[in-house]
Length: 346
Image 1 (cartoon, rainbow, N blue to C red):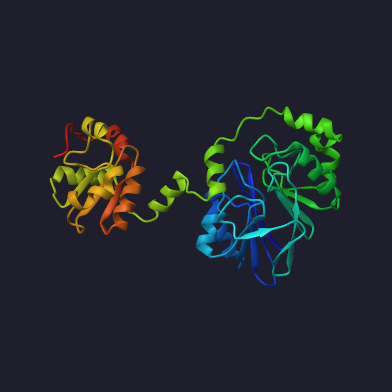
Image 2: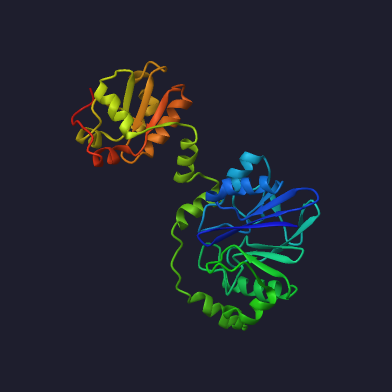
């Protein structure tokens, strides 16, 4: 087995490959590590065949949908997942075959109702069901401490004690544990009676994950996050520096259209000299009226440089192939002491 682990803010993901066939599976990928996954697979001579989420994540944005579109491969989750982009729904006792590797599905509800573990050779990927020195919480949507008790004590802890445990989270830089180690030393697993375990889980009083609402919405529905939209837009547009735009404004060149896509109040308070005003929300409706020449060079600007990136990407999709975005936005422009004007659009 070819094996690579990845960490991002305590979230763990894993790339497993068959050395003979060069086929691979990626487990619990996180959106910010896409380039690392692809680079590592290429370095190891692997071709990713499956993407797996062990459960619906509430604390990070899954990369399965994005990678599935890029690589044209299936996303596998347990059959109870609500995510519409899952095209391989697996059931308890079934297997994913990756070359000579056999990944067996073990349904382990409790952290979420769609939680599962994957057993392959000498290791088990436990998602958020079993952590090193802990367990998954049960106070998030579809969590159930009674179900987690059964999953842990009737299923996971009955596996071979020598199996190596690789969870979806680890915050102390440990690489792995074993079923035997967790059974003997994990504090939560020492509460072995059902009522006591349920009471313990119901009184953990943990803080909610930072991005829980957006992460759940995205991971359950397949929608795009703002960060994903910005990353995609940024990959399709060029940028202009503050200094470059300043030099062109001072030169009085009419070759460049400066397009301020903020709302009217922000534009009228302070904008780049000579900038036209066209709010991002009206771009598609007014672009042909306000910018009749698609061959003109355009630089879009907003307050922080994010909305203008989306606007420049939209302009390029509409045929304005010389659209760019201002790097840094008006906030950086003002902080640099560059000239501004106030009032309505010329």
